[in-house]
Length: 248
Ligand SMILES: Nc1ncnc2c1ncn2[C@@H]1O[C@H](COP(=O)(O)OP(=O)(O)O)[C@@H](O)[C@H]1O
Ligand SMILES: [Mg+2]
Image 1 (cartoon, rainbow, N blue to C red):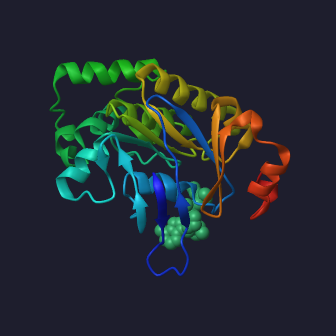
Image 2 (cartoon, rainbow, N blue to C red):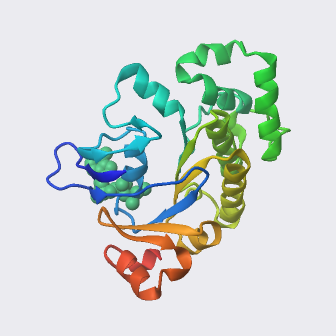
């Protein structure tokens, strides 16, 4: 990503102001920053859920910012997203939510009629088993706890076999006691499947535990990019002081 700017329609200022970052294959980075610093906008610009207003994003050899139609959909399939609010289809079974990760929501009818190859179903079932949901394949999502829902969300994203995982504050809708388990699961599965990940984490302590490299955003600008250990208290104060220090 080079010199990325985002300005929302009707706004008078850019929310992202010249962001530059690059990620190696298999790398896991945390993005920290106060509420409103632009973390979600950054992730959503990468898969064009939000339109960049200037700058460049490349995935391998492909320039993402100019893609349209079918090529944009193909590119999006190479990126899996894990959301703060899970974004599952609540009235569908756990298994179908994961299967939809691969075939895309335009094939929702196939899910209703369970028209999937047996091998694909087996693969989804073993992934769900890996995250501890082996007993829940046929349950509707709306019968699950928050932590279980997020495990489904993680499986759905990985089942897409993405090259890049975009993870937006995956634990902030959850009980803090299970935040650690969920982060651990995301990190371990990213490693196991060899996928690179950018993970927004509001909680600095959690970021420190799971990412060796951290990127700090402040008012839409990258103010730090490097190993967590070199991020000192003064810098942290600078990153979080702008809006609300109590959120640290
Ligand atoms: N859809 C939107 N339309 C207009 N402004 C938005 C929209 N989404 C976010 N913003 C604004 O962009 C800024 C950054 O928000 P966001 O990317 O959500 O930050 P973070 O995820 O770090 O909390 C905030 O000032 C927010 O109000
Ligand atoms: Mg956000």
